[in-house]
Length: 443
Image (cartoon, rainbow, N blue to C red; front, side, top):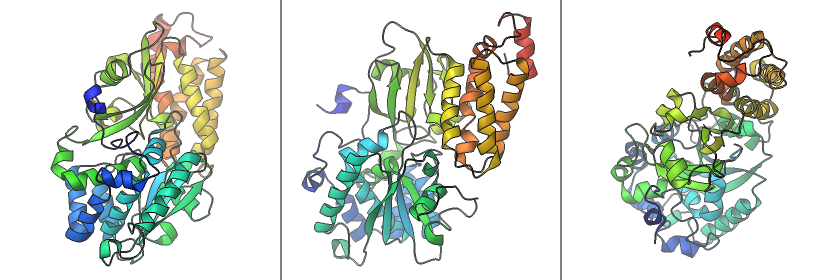
Protein backbone atom coordinates (compact mmCIF):
# COMPACT_ATOMS: atom_id res chain seq x y z
CA UNK A 1 0.00 0.00 0.00
CA UNK A 2 1.36 3.44 -0.88
CA UNK A 3 2.14 6.03 1.77
CA UNK A 4 -0.57 8.26 0.30
CA UNK A 5 -3.12 5.46 0.64
CA UNK A 6 -2.12 4.88 4.27
CA UNK A 7 -2.40 8.58 5.07
CA UNK A 8 -4.44 10.48 2.48
CA UNK A 9 -3.28 13.80 3.89
CA UNK A 10 0.21 13.10 2.54
CA UNK A 11 1.25 13.34 -1.10
CA UNK A 12 4.78 12.20 -1.87
CA UNK A 13 6.59 13.89 -4.76
CA UNK A 14 10.00 14.91 -3.39
CA UNK A 15 10.00 11.85 -1.10
CA UNK A 16 8.48 9.55 -3.73
CA UNK A 17 11.30 6.98 -3.69
CA UNK A 18 12.62 7.33 -0.14
CA UNK A 19 12.32 4.02 1.68
CA UNK A 20 11.10 2.24 -1.45
CA UNK A 21 14.35 1.79 -3.42
CA UNK A 22 17.94 0.92 -2.60
CA UNK A 23 19.67 4.32 -2.78
CA UNK A 24 23.01 2.65 -3.46
CA UNK A 25 21.79 0.85 -6.59
CA UNK A 26 21.20 2.97 -9.68
CA UNK A 27 19.21 0.12 -11.27
CA UNK A 28 16.56 0.52 -8.57
CA UNK A 29 16.22 4.18 -9.50
CA UNK A 30 16.01 3.35 -13.21
CA UNK A 31 13.35 0.72 -12.47
CA UNK A 32 11.01 3.42 -11.08
CA UNK A 33 11.52 5.74 -14.04
CA UNK A 34 14.84 7.27 -13.09
CA UNK A 35 16.69 9.25 -15.80
CA UNK A 36 13.68 9.07 -18.15
CA UNK A 37 13.09 12.79 -17.63
CA UNK A 38 16.73 13.52 -18.50
CA UNK A 39 16.46 11.43 -21.66
CA UNK A 40 13.30 13.28 -22.70
CA UNK A 41 14.89 16.67 -22.04
CA UNK A 42 18.11 16.01 -23.93
CA UNK A 43 16.53 14.33 -26.94
CA UNK A 44 13.25 16.21 -27.43
CA UNK A 45 13.36 19.59 -25.68
CA UNK A 46 15.22 22.85 -26.13
CA UNK A 47 16.63 24.85 -23.23
CA UNK A 48 13.76 27.33 -23.46
CA UNK A 49 11.17 24.54 -23.50
CA UNK A 50 12.59 23.06 -20.31
CA UNK A 51 12.62 26.44 -18.58
CA UNK A 52 9.09 27.21 -19.79
CA UNK A 53 7.83 23.91 -18.38
CA UNK A 54 9.34 24.65 -14.96
CA UNK A 55 7.95 28.20 -15.04
CA UNK A 56 4.44 27.00 -15.91
CA UNK A 57 4.56 24.45 -13.09
CA UNK A 58 4.78 27.25 -10.53
CA UNK A 59 7.60 25.52 -8.64
CA UNK A 60 9.17 27.86 -6.10
CA UNK A 61 12.44 27.35 -4.26
CA UNK A 62 12.01 25.04 -1.29
CA UNK A 63 15.00 26.36 0.64
CA UNK A 64 13.64 29.57 2.14
CA UNK A 65 12.27 32.59 0.32
CA UNK A 66 10.34 30.73 -2.36
CA UNK A 67 11.76 32.43 -5.47
CA UNK A 68 10.27 30.99 -8.71
CA UNK A 69 12.64 28.25 -9.89
CA UNK A 70 11.97 28.60 -13.60
CA UNK A 71 12.57 32.33 -13.46
CA UNK A 72 15.90 31.82 -11.71
CA UNK A 73 16.93 29.34 -14.40
CA UNK A 74 15.85 31.76 -17.13
CA UNK A 75 17.81 34.68 -15.69
CA UNK A 76 20.94 32.53 -15.43
CA UNK A 77 20.52 31.12 -18.93
CA UNK A 78 20.12 34.59 -20.46
CA UNK A 79 23.46 35.87 -19.15
CA UNK A 80 26.02 36.34 -21.91
CA UNK A 81 28.95 34.72 -20.06
CA UNK A 82 29.60 31.32 -21.64
CA UNK A 83 30.74 29.76 -18.34
CA UNK A 84 27.80 29.00 -16.08
CA UNK A 85 27.37 26.83 -13.00
CA UNK A 86 24.53 25.18 -11.12
CA UNK A 87 24.80 24.47 -7.40
CA UNK A 88 22.72 22.28 -5.12
CA UNK A 89 22.45 23.75 -1.64
CA UNK A 90 22.53 20.78 0.74
CA UNK A 91 23.73 22.77 3.75
CA UNK A 92 20.47 22.50 5.77
CA UNK A 93 21.47 24.23 9.00
CA UNK A 94 18.10 24.71 10.75
CA UNK A 95 17.80 23.03 14.16
CA UNK A 96 15.40 20.10 13.85
CA UNK A 97 15.48 20.02 10.03
CA UNK A 98 16.38 16.83 8.16
CA UNK A 99 14.39 17.01 4.91
CA UNK A 100 17.31 17.42 2.52
CA UNK A 101 19.45 14.85 4.34
CA UNK A 102 16.66 12.28 4.01
CA UNK A 103 16.31 12.86 0.27
CA UNK A 104 20.06 12.59 -0.30
CA UNK A 105 20.28 9.45 1.82
CA UNK A 106 17.18 7.84 0.35
CA UNK A 107 17.11 8.99 -3.28
CA UNK A 108 20.37 10.66 -4.35
CA UNK A 109 19.89 10.04 -8.08
CA UNK A 110 16.75 12.22 -8.11
CA UNK A 111 18.95 15.20 -7.25
CA UNK A 112 21.70 14.27 -9.71
CA UNK A 113 19.22 13.83 -12.57
CA UNK A 114 17.59 17.18 -11.82
CA UNK A 115 20.95 18.94 -11.69
CA UNK A 116 21.83 17.63 -15.15
CA UNK A 117 18.46 18.85 -16.43
CA UNK A 118 19.05 22.23 -14.81
CA UNK A 119 22.58 22.37 -16.17
CA UNK A 120 21.27 21.74 -19.69
CA UNK A 121 18.55 24.38 -19.28
CA UNK A 122 20.89 27.17 -18.20
CA UNK A 123 23.86 26.14 -20.36
CA UNK A 124 26.20 24.92 -17.63
CA UNK A 125 28.78 22.16 -17.97
CA UNK A 126 29.59 21.81 -14.25
CA UNK A 127 27.51 21.46 -11.12
CA UNK A 128 28.38 21.40 -7.44
CA UNK A 129 26.64 19.89 -4.45
CA UNK A 130 27.51 21.93 -1.36
CA UNK A 131 26.93 19.62 1.60
CA UNK A 132 27.87 19.91 5.25
CA UNK A 133 30.52 17.45 6.40
CA UNK A 134 28.21 16.41 9.30
CA UNK A 135 26.19 14.33 6.80
CA UNK A 136 28.54 11.35 6.32
CA UNK A 137 25.87 8.88 5.12
CA UNK A 138 24.47 11.37 2.60
CA UNK A 139 28.00 12.07 1.36
CA UNK A 140 28.76 8.37 1.03
CA UNK A 141 25.60 7.72 -0.98
CA UNK A 142 26.20 10.73 -3.18
CA UNK A 143 29.70 9.46 -3.94
CA UNK A 144 28.29 6.06 -4.88
CA UNK A 145 25.55 7.66 -7.00
CA UNK A 146 28.03 9.91 -8.82
CA UNK A 147 30.25 6.95 -9.65
CA UNK A 148 27.33 4.88 -10.91
CA UNK A 149 25.90 7.76 -12.98
CA UNK A 150 29.27 8.25 -14.67
CA UNK A 151 29.62 4.54 -15.37
CA UNK A 152 26.25 4.42 -17.13
CA UNK A 153 26.78 7.66 -19.04
CA UNK A 154 24.30 9.89 -17.20
CA UNK A 155 27.21 12.17 -16.24
CA UNK A 156 30.22 13.01 -18.35
CA UNK A 157 30.69 13.51 -22.07
CA UNK A 158 27.89 13.37 -24.67
CA UNK A 159 25.09 12.31 -22.37
CA UNK A 160 22.42 10.24 -24.20
CA UNK A 161 24.64 10.48 -27.30
CA UNK A 162 23.98 14.21 -27.57
CA UNK A 163 26.43 17.10 -27.68
CA UNK A 164 25.67 17.97 -24.06
CA UNK A 165 28.34 17.17 -21.44
CA UNK A 166 27.96 17.75 -17.72
CA UNK A 167 29.55 16.60 -14.47
CA UNK A 168 29.02 17.18 -10.77
CA UNK A 169 31.49 17.68 -7.93
CA UNK A 170 30.99 17.65 -4.17
CA UNK A 171 31.96 20.64 -2.06
CA UNK A 172 32.06 20.23 1.71
CA UNK A 173 30.97 22.82 4.25
CA UNK A 174 31.95 23.10 7.90
CA UNK A 175 28.40 23.52 9.16
CA UNK A 176 28.08 27.31 9.21
CA UNK A 177 24.40 28.31 9.23
CA UNK A 178 25.15 31.46 7.23
CA UNK A 179 26.36 29.34 4.33
CA UNK A 180 22.77 28.48 3.62
CA UNK A 181 22.64 31.99 2.11
CA UNK A 182 23.59 31.58 -1.53
CA UNK A 183 26.37 34.18 -1.77
CA UNK A 184 28.00 32.92 1.44
CA UNK A 185 27.68 29.39 0.07
CA UNK A 186 29.41 30.42 -3.16
CA UNK A 187 32.23 32.10 -1.26
CA UNK A 188 32.69 28.89 0.72
CA UNK A 189 32.74 26.87 -2.52
CA UNK A 190 35.57 29.12 -3.72
CA UNK A 191 37.55 28.39 -0.55
CA UNK A 192 36.87 31.78 0.98
CA UNK A 193 35.35 32.69 4.32
CA UNK A 194 31.62 31.96 4.30
CA UNK A 195 30.31 35.52 4.29
CA UNK A 196 27.44 36.96 2.24
CA UNK A 197 27.99 39.54 -0.49
CA UNK A 198 26.05 42.70 -1.20
CA UNK A 199 23.29 42.18 -3.76
CA UNK A 200 22.97 43.10 -6.58
CA UNK A 201 24.65 41.60 -8.48
CA UNK A 202 22.82 38.36 -7.77
CA UNK A 203 24.48 34.96 -8.27
CA UNK A 204 22.46 34.45 -11.46
CA UNK A 205 24.46 37.38 -12.83
CA UNK A 206 27.79 37.02 -11.02
CA UNK A 207 28.26 33.97 -8.85
CA UNK A 208 30.92 31.26 -8.70
CA UNK A 209 34.21 32.93 -9.69
CA UNK A 210 32.22 35.81 -11.19
CA UNK A 211 30.23 33.56 -13.55
CA UNK A 212 26.41 33.24 -13.73
CA UNK A 213 25.40 30.68 -11.11
CA UNK A 214 22.05 29.11 -10.26
CA UNK A 215 21.61 27.89 -6.67
CA UNK A 216 18.68 25.61 -5.77
CA UNK A 217 18.21 23.45 -2.71
CA UNK A 218 17.83 19.67 -2.52
CA UNK A 219 14.05 19.54 -2.26
CA UNK A 220 13.64 21.92 -5.19
CA UNK A 221 15.70 19.60 -7.39
CA UNK A 222 13.73 16.57 -6.15
CA UNK A 223 10.60 18.01 -7.81
CA UNK A 224 12.13 18.56 -11.27
CA UNK A 225 11.95 15.08 -12.85
CA UNK A 226 8.28 14.47 -11.93
CA UNK A 227 7.38 17.84 -13.48
CA UNK A 228 9.11 16.88 -16.73
CA UNK A 229 7.51 13.41 -16.85
CA UNK A 230 3.99 14.30 -15.69
CA UNK A 231 3.77 17.85 -17.02
CA UNK A 232 3.61 21.32 -15.56
CA UNK A 233 -0.20 21.32 -15.48
CA UNK A 234 -0.18 18.25 -13.21
CA UNK A 235 2.16 19.92 -10.71
CA UNK A 236 0.31 23.24 -10.92
CA UNK A 237 -2.96 21.48 -10.06
CA UNK A 238 -1.56 20.68 -6.59
CA UNK A 239 -1.38 23.30 -3.86
CA UNK A 240 -2.65 26.87 -3.77
CA UNK A 241 -2.90 29.66 -6.31
CA UNK A 242 0.51 31.13 -5.52
CA UNK A 243 2.25 28.10 -3.98
CA UNK A 244 2.14 25.02 -6.18
CA UNK A 245 3.01 21.41 -5.42
CA UNK A 246 3.86 19.85 -2.08
CA UNK A 247 6.18 20.72 0.79
CA UNK A 248 8.20 18.43 3.04
CA UNK A 249 8.18 19.31 6.74
CA UNK A 250 10.27 17.91 9.57
CA UNK A 251 7.78 17.47 12.39
CA UNK A 252 9.58 17.47 15.75
CA UNK A 253 9.10 18.55 19.34
CA UNK A 254 5.96 17.98 21.44
CA UNK A 255 4.09 15.81 18.95
CA UNK A 256 3.29 12.08 18.99
CA UNK A 257 4.45 11.18 15.47
CA UNK A 258 7.88 12.68 14.89
CA UNK A 259 9.30 12.54 11.38
CA UNK A 260 8.99 13.81 7.83
CA UNK A 261 5.65 14.64 6.23
CA UNK A 262 4.99 15.76 2.67
CA UNK A 263 1.69 17.49 2.07
CA UNK A 264 0.13 19.64 -0.65
CA UNK A 265 0.59 23.37 -0.20
CA UNK A 266 -2.54 24.72 1.45
CA UNK A 267 -2.77 21.96 4.05
CA UNK A 268 -3.48 23.50 7.45
CA UNK A 269 -1.25 23.29 10.49
CA UNK A 270 -4.09 21.60 12.36
CA UNK A 271 -4.18 18.77 9.82
CA UNK A 272 -0.41 18.31 9.96
CA UNK A 273 -0.07 18.40 13.75
CA UNK A 274 -3.24 16.63 14.88
CA UNK A 275 -4.10 14.27 12.01
CA UNK A 276 -0.70 13.31 10.59
CA UNK A 277 1.32 14.10 13.72
CA UNK A 278 -1.17 12.51 16.09
CA UNK A 279 -1.48 15.54 18.37
CA UNK A 280 0.31 16.48 21.57
CA UNK A 281 1.55 13.64 23.83
CA UNK A 282 1.18 13.08 27.57
CA UNK A 283 -2.17 14.86 27.83
CA UNK A 284 -0.69 18.30 27.26
CA UNK A 285 -2.22 21.09 25.20
CA UNK A 286 -0.88 22.62 22.02
CA UNK A 287 0.64 26.05 22.56
CA UNK A 288 2.58 27.08 19.44
CA UNK A 289 4.55 25.85 16.45
CA UNK A 290 7.76 27.36 15.14
CA UNK A 291 8.07 27.22 11.36
CA UNK A 292 11.04 28.32 9.28
CA UNK A 293 13.65 27.43 11.89
CA UNK A 294 15.58 30.24 13.61
CA UNK A 295 14.54 32.55 10.77
CA UNK A 296 10.82 31.96 11.26
CA UNK A 297 8.29 32.84 13.90
CA UNK A 298 5.97 31.13 16.35
CA UNK A 299 2.37 30.50 15.35
CA UNK A 300 -0.27 30.29 18.12
CA UNK A 301 -3.40 28.13 18.27
CA UNK A 302 -5.65 30.79 16.70
CA UNK A 303 -3.80 30.40 13.39
CA UNK A 304 -3.84 26.59 13.25
CA UNK A 305 -6.40 26.60 10.43
CA UNK A 306 -4.51 28.89 8.09
CA UNK A 307 -3.64 27.16 4.77
CA UNK A 308 0.12 26.69 4.65
CA UNK A 309 1.83 28.50 1.81
CA UNK A 310 4.59 31.08 1.42
CA UNK A 311 2.38 34.16 1.56
CA UNK A 312 0.07 33.07 4.37
CA UNK A 313 2.98 32.28 6.68
CA UNK A 314 4.57 35.67 6.00
CA UNK A 315 1.27 37.38 6.77
CA UNK A 316 1.24 35.99 10.33
CA UNK A 317 4.88 36.73 11.09
CA UNK A 318 6.55 33.45 10.19
CA UNK A 319 7.95 31.88 7.01
CA UNK A 320 8.16 28.58 5.18
CA UNK A 321 11.94 28.34 5.34
CA UNK A 322 13.33 24.94 4.50
CA UNK A 323 10.50 23.17 6.34
CA UNK A 324 11.41 22.72 9.99
CA UNK A 325 8.33 22.56 12.23
CA UNK A 326 8.87 22.47 15.99
CA UNK A 327 5.77 21.87 18.14
CA UNK A 328 5.48 23.29 21.66
CA UNK A 329 3.00 22.66 24.47
CA UNK A 330 1.85 24.67 27.49
CA UNK A 331 4.95 23.72 29.48
CA UNK A 332 7.18 25.77 27.15
CA UNK A 333 7.95 29.38 28.00
CA UNK A 334 7.94 31.48 24.85
CA UNK A 335 10.47 34.02 26.10
CA UNK A 336 12.95 31.19 26.61
CA UNK A 337 12.10 29.87 23.14
CA UNK A 338 12.86 33.26 21.61
CA UNK A 339 16.12 33.44 23.54
CA UNK A 340 17.12 29.94 22.37
CA UNK A 341 16.71 30.81 18.70
CA UNK A 342 18.36 34.19 19.09
CA UNK A 343 21.36 32.61 20.79
CA UNK A 344 21.68 30.28 17.80
CA UNK A 345 21.62 33.06 15.21
CA UNK A 346 23.91 35.23 17.33
CA UNK A 347 26.49 32.42 17.43
CA UNK A 348 26.07 31.71 13.70
CA UNK A 349 26.45 35.34 12.58
CA UNK A 350 29.45 35.68 10.28
CA UNK A 351 30.15 39.09 11.80
CA UNK A 352 30.48 40.98 8.56
CA UNK A 353 27.75 43.57 9.20
CA UNK A 354 27.35 45.53 12.43
CA UNK A 355 23.54 45.24 12.82
CA UNK A 356 23.73 41.45 12.93
CA UNK A 357 27.07 41.09 14.73
CA UNK A 358 26.27 43.57 17.52
CA UNK A 359 22.49 43.83 17.32
CA UNK A 360 21.81 40.13 17.94
CA UNK A 361 24.20 40.16 20.89
CA UNK A 362 22.48 43.16 22.46
CA UNK A 363 19.08 41.55 21.88
CA UNK A 364 20.27 38.38 23.57
CA UNK A 365 21.61 40.35 26.55
CA UNK A 366 18.25 42.06 27.02
CA UNK A 367 16.33 38.79 26.74
CA UNK A 368 18.69 37.20 29.22
CA UNK A 369 17.92 39.97 31.69
CA UNK A 370 14.21 39.35 31.31
CA UNK A 371 14.41 35.56 31.71
CA UNK A 372 16.43 36.15 34.90
CA UNK A 373 13.62 38.45 36.12
CA UNK A 374 15.92 41.46 36.15
CA UNK A 375 14.39 43.25 33.15
CA UNK A 376 12.20 46.35 33.08
CA UNK A 377 9.67 47.86 30.69
CA UNK A 378 12.50 49.97 29.31
CA UNK A 379 14.26 46.74 28.34
CA UNK A 380 11.16 45.56 26.45
CA UNK A 381 11.09 48.88 24.64
CA UNK A 382 14.77 48.46 23.73
CA UNK A 383 14.15 44.89 22.50
CA UNK A 384 11.48 46.02 20.08
CA UNK A 385 13.59 48.87 18.72
CA UNK A 386 16.64 46.62 18.37
CA UNK A 387 14.63 43.86 16.71
CA UNK A 388 13.35 46.09 13.94
CA UNK A 389 16.75 47.75 13.51
CA UNK A 390 18.45 44.39 13.02
CA UNK A 391 15.64 43.20 10.73
CA UNK A 392 15.78 46.30 8.55
CA UNK A 393 19.50 46.92 8.22
CA UNK A 394 21.34 43.56 8.22
CA UNK A 395 23.21 42.51 5.10
CA UNK A 396 21.74 39.04 4.51
CA UNK A 397 18.79 36.86 5.37
CA UNK A 398 20.37 35.54 8.57
CA UNK A 399 20.42 38.95 10.22
CA UNK A 400 17.21 40.16 8.59
CA UNK A 401 15.24 37.25 10.02
CA UNK A 402 17.14 36.69 13.29
CA UNK A 403 14.66 38.84 15.32
CA UNK A 404 11.59 37.01 13.92
CA UNK A 405 11.18 34.62 16.90
CA UNK A 406 11.41 37.61 19.25
CA UNK A 407 8.94 39.73 17.28
CA UNK A 408 6.41 36.92 16.91
CA UNK A 409 6.55 35.80 20.55
CA UNK A 410 6.10 39.41 21.69
CA UNK A 411 3.10 39.69 19.37
CA UNK A 412 1.34 36.48 20.39
CA UNK A 413 2.63 35.79 23.92
CA UNK A 414 3.03 39.27 25.35
CA UNK A 415 1.77 38.22 28.79
CA UNK A 416 4.73 35.90 29.21
CA UNK A 417 7.12 38.80 28.75
CA UNK A 418 5.18 40.94 31.21
CA UNK A 419 5.11 38.13 33.76
CA UNK A 420 8.91 38.31 33.94
CA UNK A 421 9.17 42.09 34.32
CA UNK A 422 10.06 43.07 37.85
CA UNK A 423 8.28 46.46 37.92
CA UNK A 424 4.80 45.14 36.95
CA UNK A 425 2.58 43.73 39.68
CA UNK A 426 0.10 41.84 37.52
CA UNK A 427 0.23 41.08 33.79
CA UNK A 428 -3.52 41.66 33.39
CA UNK A 429 -3.60 44.95 35.26
CA UNK A 430 -3.68 48.48 33.87
CA UNK A 431 0.07 48.35 33.21
CA UNK A 432 -0.51 45.49 30.76
CA UNK A 433 -2.30 47.69 28.25
CA UNK A 434 -0.14 50.74 28.84
CA UNK A 435 2.99 48.67 28.30
CA UNK A 436 1.64 47.15 25.07
CA UNK A 437 0.81 50.57 23.74
CA UNK A 438 4.27 51.87 24.69
CA UNK A 439 6.12 49.47 22.42
CA UNK A 440 3.57 49.49 19.61
CA UNK A 441 1.96 46.07 20.04
CA UNK A 442 -1.75 45.45 19.64
CA UNK A 443 -3.81 43.96 22.46
